[in-house]
Length: 72
Image 1 (cartoon, rainbow, N blue to C red):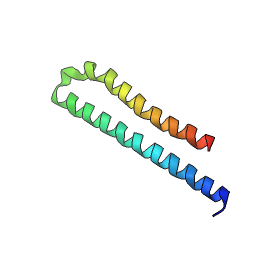
Image 2: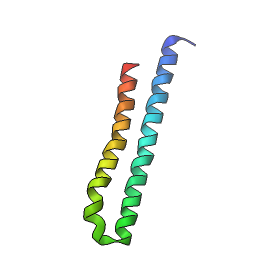
Image 3: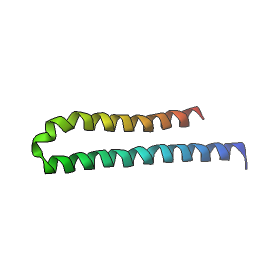
């Protein structure tokens, strides 16, 4: 296998894993927050900021994966 092919495959694998895992995490975060708000509508104010922070931290992992791809 040539070096360029291996490099492209490594980049593809890194961005695939680095993109799928945060997407699943963000989906679970938002789903659980919506479920909690559905059970207790008064808690929406208390849940909004932690939900956004959790989604931002999960998205940061995707950005790290993108940085790794650019450095390969």
